[in-house]
Length: 144
Image (cartoon, helix red, strand yellow):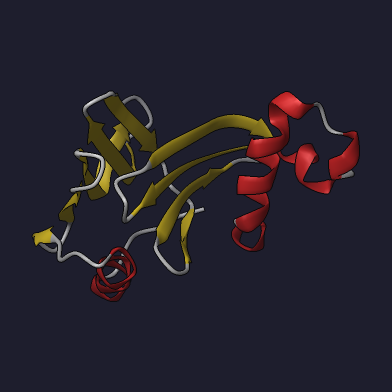
């Protein structure tokens, strides 16, 4: 699935997170700071980036820097604004899905290579270890 961000999408992300972005027509950066916890998150969306040189494939990449680490999600297939203050970036494949969740309070969560079948499972029968992933990804099920 080919997906790229529009300027309208970027403005909606800024509105949801309550912070303005910096950037050009193909790269946008946000800096989020939480003064209560002294946490910060800097994330950038790269539109039309060469994500597979062997296949000459371009796509969307999101990179996130926190004081705890650096995360990237390549080949986005969509995103979801989760009101009031989170953005969920998604990469969905035939059987697997990954997502990166960024919150205005400088939170960042990554769920990677999750089997789509858990979204159709009875939540009471799931192993507790995968319950959080199932709940987070069920929010994005409408765009999978």
